[in-house]
Length: 221
Image (tube, rainbow, N blue to C red; front, side, top):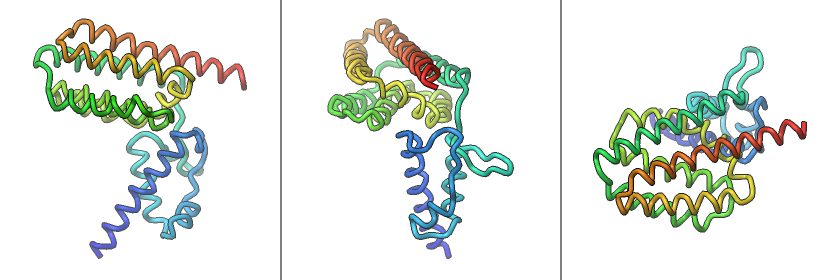
């Protein structure tokens, strides 16, 4: 019985990852219902692992359950989008402050350089969004603060969905790569003030990009 539970848990994770990718790529839109039996049929399973997958996604903030409607892809109001991005800026600014106080962690910096090498080769904006988030998570880890890290994790999935919108705009990936490359260089040379300023501008530019994209979407409606 425990073996079956392990298999169901593993399958739930696979299904949750699949649904996450569908949301990230826009195949599933905000407000769209998740049909359990379709996923069950696709994976040749009962509905139990599908329900568990949906439950995992509700915890991560990608899906919400609506009475009499079921599980749907969560949408975000403009206000919520900007709140999430502002919270990210605050957490990363605090992380930079702790890095300046505690010094550079060599392992985290090495991880950032490794991720940057992958970012420089990536052209798919959905894959790039994941790499970008991994880079920023490594920066958060460098702060050596569990409080900052845990709060950052809580907004991880909504941030990925929102930032994917920014990286879908042509030219934003090239701009992002250049800024991440410069950020690593500044951290390596101990120029914390310049690194902090660059990070703040980088994150603010994401907000401006998303503002423009949301405005464009409104005009096209």
